[in-house]
Image (cartoon, rainbow, N blue to C red; front, top):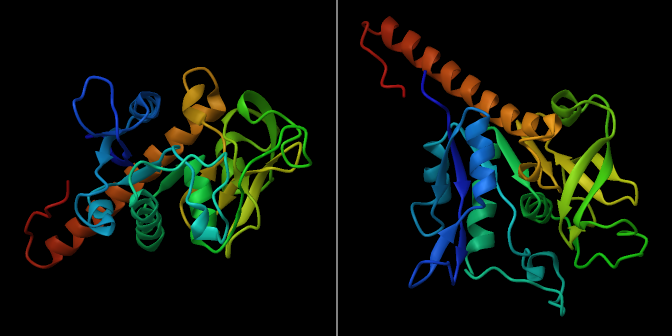
Length: 257
């Protein structure tokens, strides 16, 4: 059986080693982690077809980490720590991808920037910069491994377990006020939001980078396995429904992938 197609929005970069001009990139470890979980990763081009049209082609989506979300989207001003995306349309494209995934029930794993963008898109805010030693950020979140507590009974707990899990972090921003209809399902010891869910939707958003240790940490691999298997179930379920409907109408073969 073919691998589920997992769309991964590319991050527009003004400079890519080996290219003369601009490029669109995704961290190789994200792609490897999807492939290791049984999926087929495909990069989504920000200036291609409309986000919703692109999403329709895929069985699942992984929204990777990247540049900072524009502070204008949550009513703040840029500061000296702000690291903008090279492409002005990056935030809008990925926001549209998230909305299309939720609307269509496409299994989605959002990583780091993906969690922050989800929160802002739902009216939430971000902490623009975690000050080391501050109330939020009293543990190291940039280039460090630390534990997070997972909410029992959550979708996340069903995937990684309900006990504390060790995660690899690389971020300087974090969710502040939580957006509408979002549920916090994991926090760090200093209170930083580490996971968000949309109740009833096949969507997991985590602040850490599961791709960093997916090849050695079962909990991180499980996140990629979850999105791939949920994508497979959605694809195969839709295909079976289409086949049954077609057979009832005269036995024609369905054109499912």
